[in-house]
Image 1: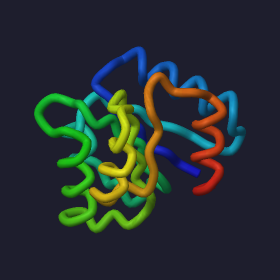
Image 2: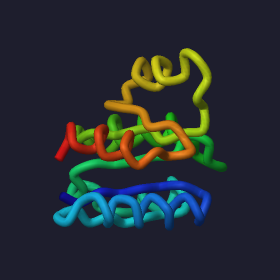
Image 3: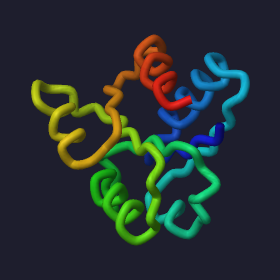
Image 4: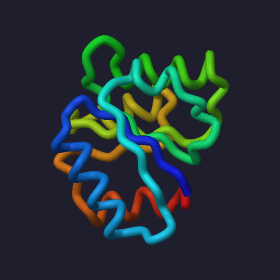
Length: 118
């Protein structure tokens, strides 16, 4: 499985990359700093996208819409966000995200969530 993760925070990218490498042997992950970076890619080779929500220029919700509408990406897109108050998960799911992981990322939650799609 090949995962793409976009987050403007370098520490978040490093930590999530390390967590996924510890949890899953057969999963590769590529990380990017901005939504603009991934819009130039051929995203069809990815099996799943993890996207931060609060990013400059293009936020995670806007990125989700672009990937679905303009790039015809039909594979899972999971929101990863510090927005963790009551109702935020439901908002992300209603927006069309396949799932939601809150920050700070809990390794057990990450594993449970990704297992659904691997």
